[in-house]
Length: 379
Image (cartoon, rainbow, N blue to C red; front, side, top):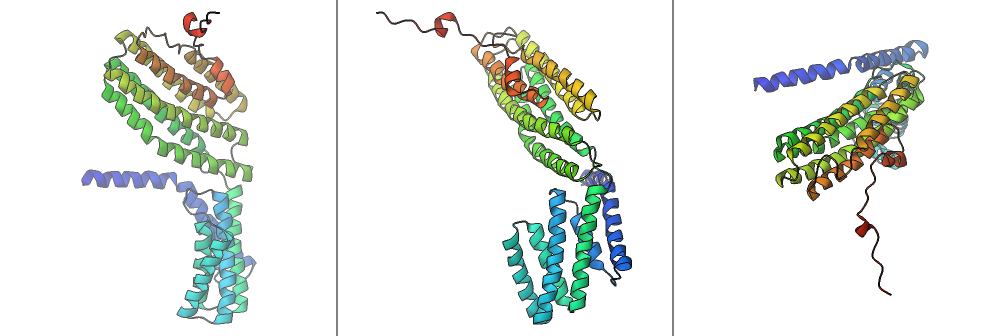
């Protein structure tokens, strides 16, 4: 129990520390929206300005710009429409139920997003329960729009407190793949199929990391398109393309680990062959980690040069994947090398190579003459 509590405290501390920038942004945005509505527009107690700003900038994995727009529009429509119906129908529990019911259905009709529907309903119920006048409806509607507008402005112009998140997201995925490759190499050296099965478990578990990291990159690209202070769009586009290729590489690593389990169970690799193939896996893992560091390079020219080096290193590794290489003689062992070839193609594409270039780096597979050309039928 004590260990779990310590883990809980540590996780909470790390989560809070990573959210310092966003928490400061939310606090500034809410207060400034409130002050603007109060002192510039002259609205008394414009709480809707602060609340709509906070809701728009809430901690979420959704695409930020879309959420800000949904919240701003949902708050404004909820306040305006709820206030209008309150003026027409009066205030009270029955009227509030009817108003919220109507606005939830209207929100679902206008947009499928849950955030939009929730915000329309929340603002409508607040206005209907507290009563409203025509003047108050206009003020609160403007307050909600001010809060959403400030949130959108902060999203676009505030310094990027998550400027390292896209790179960290890719680094996490690259680390997962490197761990799988090294675990497979350790399984080969030990001749232990259980270690290969453990590598397969790591590869399967990595899909959630891929999904989360892809979402981070999508949010970052949207922010980069909106704000001039975000990292360059070209670097993000390269990282997103690399992430798609890395996803395929991880999927192929699962195929490789599963095939390796079978090969080790059937003693399909001699010790020298297993050692040689394990060395190649270790080298591949190191190149994958170097690729992650390269994509985090801020200087465009330096990043391009390092990517070219990574492509060359991966092409050299792919060039060693001849089925008859590594001293492997068994059919199961050669099949293991064949399964590794698509993974190296994916990694070359993650480094910026196109598919045809990546395939050309692989050794050609030639059939024996008797099998390559069918014998002629006798005349």
